Structures are given as C-alpha cells and as structure tokens.
Image 1 (cartoon, rainbow, N blue to C red):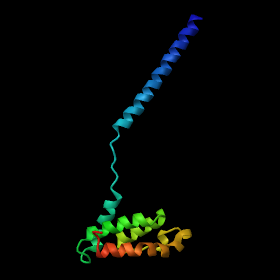
Image 2 (image 1 turned 180 degrees about the vertical axis):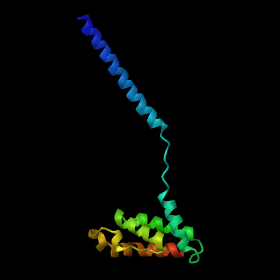
Image 3 (image 1 turned 45 degrees about the vertical axis):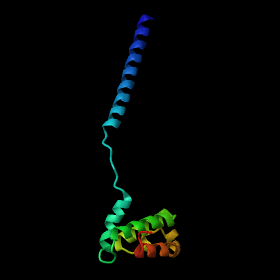
Image 4 (image 1 turned 90 degrees about the vertical axis):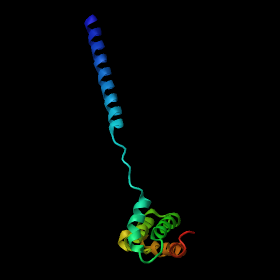
Length: 129
C-alpha cells in the first residue's frame, strides 16, 4: 500500500514538474519573440504612389494620401478597395484591372469609379480639403 502511495506521489510530482516546465517554456518563448512591426499600409501606399504623381502635381504626397483616404472611406467592399488602391499606387490614377477583382464583383467596377470620381478630382486639384 505504501509502495502504491509512493508511486502515485512520484507520478504526480513528475506530472506537475512537466506541466510547470511546459508553462515556463511557453511563457518564455512568448516573451522572447521580437515584436514584429508590420509596415503601415497607408505609408507604403503613399511611397508607391508618389513617384507617379511627381511632375503632375505640386504636392504628390498630399495627393496620394488624399486618394488613399477617400478610397478607404468610400469603397466599402474590401476586394474593390484593394484593387483600386493597387491601381492608384501602380499607375497614379484610379484604375481597376478586371483580373484584380473576383468575377462575381467585376460588375461593381463601374459603380466604384462613380463613387470615387468626385473625391479623386478633389484630391488631385485641392488635396488639402
């Protein structure tokens, strides 16, 4: 009987030690991981967009920033918004290639341009507003 009790105590001690080791490893590995800072998507957009605006506009960063903010605010659909931002950053003008949008949403490209037309013109001719 004493032997069984000793075996149980030993097993519980080993189990407890193993659990404590696992907890310590998990918590130390979580603390040891460096904090990864992802690039600011807005800043990256402005960085890619600005070269296309140089020579066209007096304040290219302001135009790109304004276009980003209006596209993000006006275009609710994530796929269309991403495609529009990609088009602006790659060409400097609001553009959406049909292959950037799922086939089910391609009919929404025209209405998306209608939504963004006035804000885009405002950005290009009066980006401070």
